[in-house]
Amino acid sequence: MAMDHDDFSSDRALAFALGQRASEVALARFRRGVATRQKPDGSLVTDADIEVERHLLEMLARERPDDAVLSEESGEHGASSRRWIIDPIDGTSYFASGRESWGTHVALERDGQLVVGLVTRPTAAQWYWATRGGGAHRGALGSDTSLEVLRVSTTDDPARARVMSWSRQNTELEARLKAGGHWVTPILDGALELAAGRLDALFDDTGYAWDLAPFVLLVEEAGGRFVDHEGGRRLDRFGGWLTNGRIDAAFGVPGER
Image (tube, rainbow, N blue to C red; front, side, top):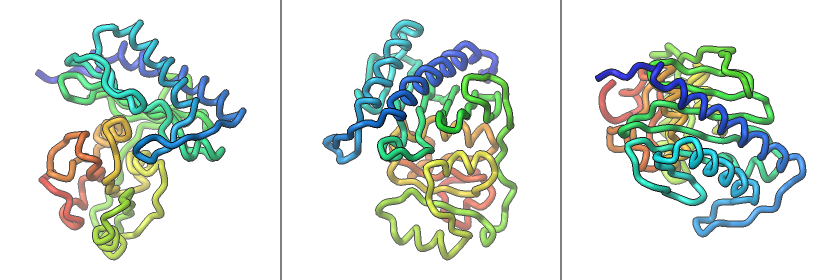
């Protein structure tokens, strides 16, 4: 049965509340400065990551006690057909060094399908959101009014395609992307640029589910495509491709549109 995006209005409102609270807590920490430490996997974490996560988990436990949660900092909580996927502070290295483009990721899966996604950009006082069937939007932080409806580009010529890679290890593919299109220096907001039509393809082989989830829904609701490395749509395959869906064959994106 098709999903009506109106079914997600209360979940979208909760995602907004989560994003708002996370932004308040993180901004206060950001302005004071934070100390960092390394996690076992070598990535950075700060006290702000942990504090934001605590607020988000408390809100979800109160508002959606029967839902499961997957969080970057503490893993899985519970089991349910409804699962919230959160990254308390995505871009911790930016956050810790006083740079912008960090924010919070919130997404909701229902029966394995992404239905709500939110990405905040607190220093710019903006956030981006999408609901399944409801489109992708950019708005002012704290407001549910859409300032911009996001649409992927219509570029269909690979030679003119603007491409980016978040790869740390696939140098052969990166060289092919640079040779086959217009290479764009990687930035944390690459997926947001793609959803807004300013980038045509993004390859990633580093992302976890909490990194990717809201970006995937934003790009899909903006008219684009996500595919994992095996041609499916799983979030637990360490990335994949986000594209406008028009130049996929030229760059070897698996599967068919």
